[in-house]
Length: 161
Image (cartoon, rainbow, N blue to C red; front, side, top):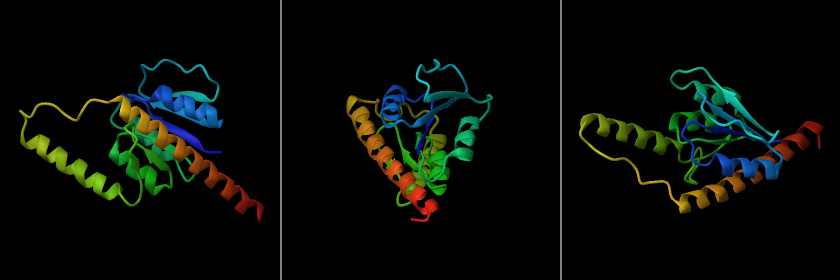
């Protein structure tokens, strides 16, 4: 069965992800440094990692693998998850795959360089919208179905059929 890992610090779609996970009967891990309301559903587990840079990312990267789904905006974490065979969905509904993770990493690095070169630059990306939320739900639903299919296929392979 697919597992769903949420990089929960500053994630705007935790509730939506929980609904999808519960509908699919999938175990979901909300991984954060703390400050998140404990989930009510038994399939959803809060995982609190120690303070520190990328502790939640490391926890997820160490566990997510083929047939799992990771929700994150963190591009380096997404790259590790994709390399491990997990499906990755950003909160805005964009999916990251082996085909596009290299470009995402390059863009991230370029934007970091631009920000550091102009300390007076104001603003960031556009605000999170209802359309983003809708795209996320659609992308997560597709990813969960694909992960469940991969898990079924892996189960058949292990059974020798």
